[in-house]
Image 1 (tube, rainbow, N blue to C red):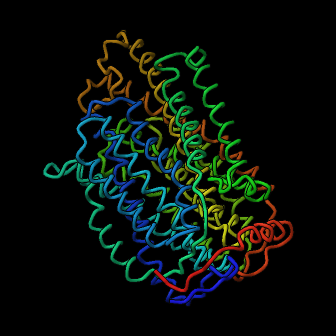
Image 2 (cartoon, one colour):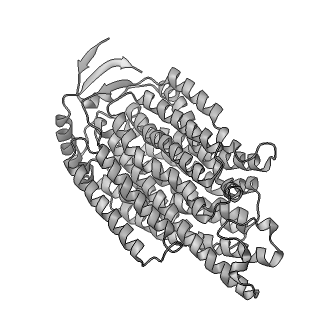
Image 3 (cartoon, one colour):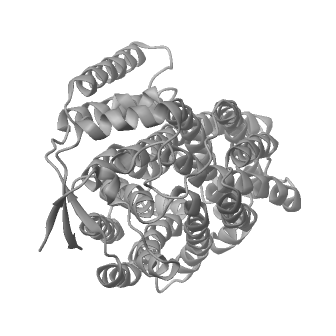
Length: 539
């Protein structure tokens, strides 16, 4: 056992390409499990919510609860990664995620399912933050684009395979939807074994304090805001005393969290990071991308099954254009960025494609030709592939090694926050629009809306009489178009934000100096952390 005092930049690890791939194998398998366990449910959700007798609000919260837990815990995992064993943390996150998945499969009501999805979100927060941190620890910024492409490819495969596997499971009578939550367990066990054998990183220890008050206040503020967005327009009017109380409460909690973060020795979201223009603009873009990505695309499975009457399996197949676009963009663009060291042009192009794709999907109806939809979905996929990983890459290139965990988790935090807000807000819009469209359509048939018998529960269109089925399919199709149209301005916000980011060529090594103002800030931060003790023991 050896001990040495070293500057925090020494945490960078020099590894060969083969060693990096071996070390990443378990990490990528763990990410695959997380993605698979999430996407395998996407096309099964309409069936799950119908069988558990839930409504549009329950559908929204099954997704939002996971995103909220992911959002709240991502900064905590990132902070822990800066002070303890990254391998142990990623194994712990994987275990928590699998436990949540198994319990979700045993759920007997939408309430139980939502609670278990929260536990899944805690594990997903760890996997989301730690994957980026571990990659940044092992790989220089210049080479990171290449390996980010591998991560994007794994995400695409998990996203492609998940809905297809989930559709087959739901359509297989002797399995049922509960197996959607169990299917990832064997992959998770394999990931834990591979991580133990292949991932070896130096353990960095330093004296820190976890900002539990900041984490609690941030979570409370976001939760209250999401509850308001979900219930407004359904349980009470948008302009009402309930709205006033919830919005005021969320703003007060947000203000208190800012105050606590400014005074904390080890803030959960370090305010000093936002003095860096690149980080601030990347956060704005990440929120916008998260709103669009999660908020709109999460309802595609519902659209295909209700508006077009497709099976869960077919719903997965029909999303392939978007997933293939993500796969191609993330792998090809990642290699180009590694070869050139330039990344801003791809962020601009990706944000533009995302905006155009969402705007075109805003024309969606229940009878829109599928070939036309395929083009629109492919544009969205290409846009996501060019923006998601590269926003994190741009931020990591502007901070020193000891701040990689905090900086990476900040971007992931705000992307998840945008997603949680997007799912809640756009889900509320969808529920409101569908209700109005159904009432309007039934009135045209001379039927009162209350006689439809839905009672807010997601309908099974295959059991409806032909005229009413057409009304319901049209309502959900038009509503889906409306939420994509509502997501388009967020793509535009992301485009504007990335246009103002100053491009700094990617560093060849983690130890290379950071250009300009960022270097000065990092030097001050490094001086404050001079008491770091780096042990020679590897995980």
